[in-house]
Length: 137
Picture (spheres, rainbow, N blue to C red):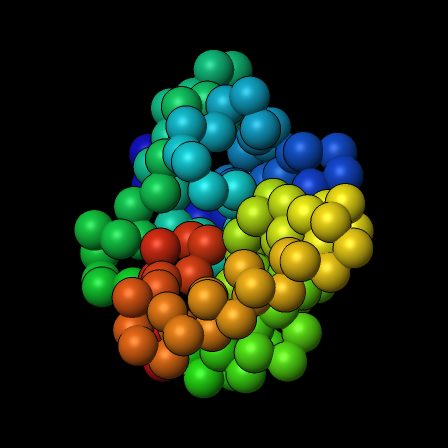
């Protein structure tokens, strides 16, 4: 079946899919994608009773991904606050942002070089997608 995610709670790792005016519960164990679910995502799923299983994204097949995040905002964040990994949080790469923050804390500031290098990569266009694979504006 095809539907879209009405709601998703990352704390409980569960949500609700709406399809043909019916609602189906799903949890993260039934999610089959690399990126986390997000409210409004179009999905394809199978039913097991009233629960959705084998939930996959179909929005990428219906229309090309729309740019949401700005490349230059991420680049300026990387240049000014790159040692905190804030630009990676902005782009949706949360684990990588935490790794940058941990490296900076562990090396007493040497993680700032990582942020500077990524600012150059963002300005140059080598980093051109956000955490959900959408292009940057």
